Length: 266
Image 1 (cartoon, rainbow, N blue to C red):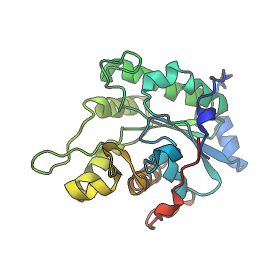
Image 2: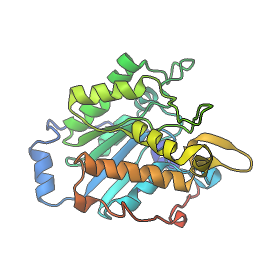
Image 3: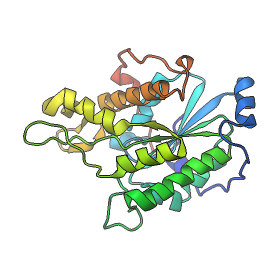
Image 4: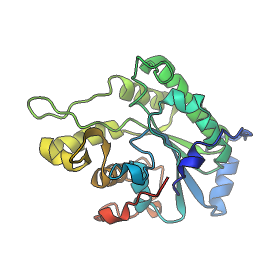
């Protein structure tokens, strides 16, 4: 399920907390009765739903449902330009927590915009405020009987003069890894996985995965092949980290047609 632009911009819903841990009785009850679960995505433009006016730009959240069983819904709340801080300050986390239910998953990927030091509305410092804001997502999900999952920021297309893929995210991936270990939260290391993928593909081939067009050379956002490739990494790691069971995923080794990606009107 992808939210419309109107829905993701709706004012925050004030959530009523449930005093239940993610692995507590409510979550167990939901699992035992076979209730349908939803995977919520909180993140930035690399994951977000894109619309017809942005095509062929594609967020990896748009492709993730292709790798999940049909009754595991995806609620993509990721929005262009947001950081872990601005997503909270705009009330978007409250909106997610108002909808989340015991047994659901909250997948959190931020870091691209947290590093914008000139923008106080978005900037966070990796080892202090970035971790502080991420804890709000973790604690909020757990308080409602849902399971938080942290994902380090997917890497940009960046190579040095020798053709080696290089990182652009500074200490943010390391800070998230440390927080995940300390808080015992499942971690999808998309930063490391995507960096390795871009390295394997190389300088020229990676252009086919990013939003390179006749008028734009975008090394941050994906086109359909790139979004599909990253969504495959996400689904594979959800399985590898035992967040999802084998029955929850599908098509991990299959070719996904680009035509499956669609861009709705705003």
